[in-house]
Image 1 (cartoon, one colour):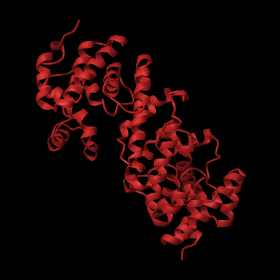
Image 2 (tube, rainbow over the protein chains, first blue to last red; image 1 turned 30 degrees about the vertical axis):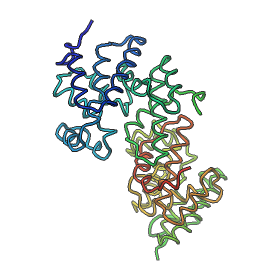
Image 3 (cartoon, helix red, strand yellow; image 1 turned 180 degrees about the horizontal axis):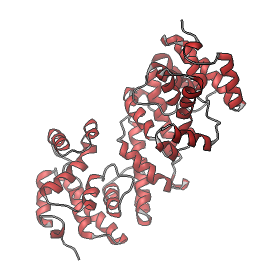
Image 4 (cartoon, each protein chain N blue to C red; image 1 turned 45 degrees about the vertical axis):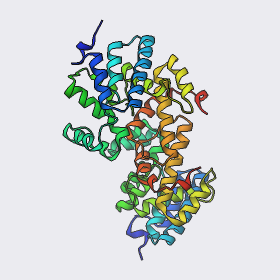
Length: 201
Length: 201
């Protein structure tokens, strides 16, 4: 049975305090719901709960970070520079993963990838990456067209939810003429083929 | 005033004969309509009619080429290998551009790019590239939701049609859970920001 100290240099209680200091209250409550949802998925699919708890709690750590600070982190940590062409909505995951590695001594690449890719996914997502991505999409307060369908699918197959969520995200961005981060397309291209026609509107 | 012989080793009549031999009748008639539409756009926007005629006539030259032959062309001509993960719908443009260069002595990169990118676009399209891309999308027999809007936009600004068409193409692919060639996203990301909200459904 693994514990926090196997993966990170703070206890869960200390991490909770850190979160509360770095984000707004509504965001903090969302993070706790993502952890709760993630732990239920981890239980269902037999994935490490310790790693799930850490990755879920850290996923939005940099969501309220000032843009200038995040831009600086992207440059000084050699993250992909095309992140700079997008905004906080895209870069807060990778920036949080770097923070987890540098300041919280997280070295487990599965946890770091789950944090980094929770918004845009990737074309080969581990079970843990899928858990965080999906928990963020379906936590109980999430309320948008299709979320109930996503919650149903999550009981069956997480990869289906990844395909569904990335498809719906792209649709939403198209409707607003917003740019799409190319990694979102790689995620969609890999996981959308799992979606049967019965999932269409 | 440029002529065919400035850009290609066949006359327009010989090219027409070549087209008729390499594609089905319906496709051939589509190609002639694309040329006609392209020439009207070239007139409107002050673009070389000779180059427009050549690029439009050649754009679908490989649309009915056997898949094995096109795959071989992609490999032996060092085209991007990710084309192989997609189908004829995506690779027939690049394969036709290679044929134009190798067998018809076309060296003008603007013509070659217009042929290669007529399906997926690119993030920096020349006026000629835009003409072929748009003519293929709006030629008179094209009939799909939004084509009238695209025809209107084409009188105003070709770049708007590129943004509109790439957005609609992605929507169509999403609705069918089909994969999206990443270059289509780069085209959308560059040109969609030109689209005002009044263009939304």
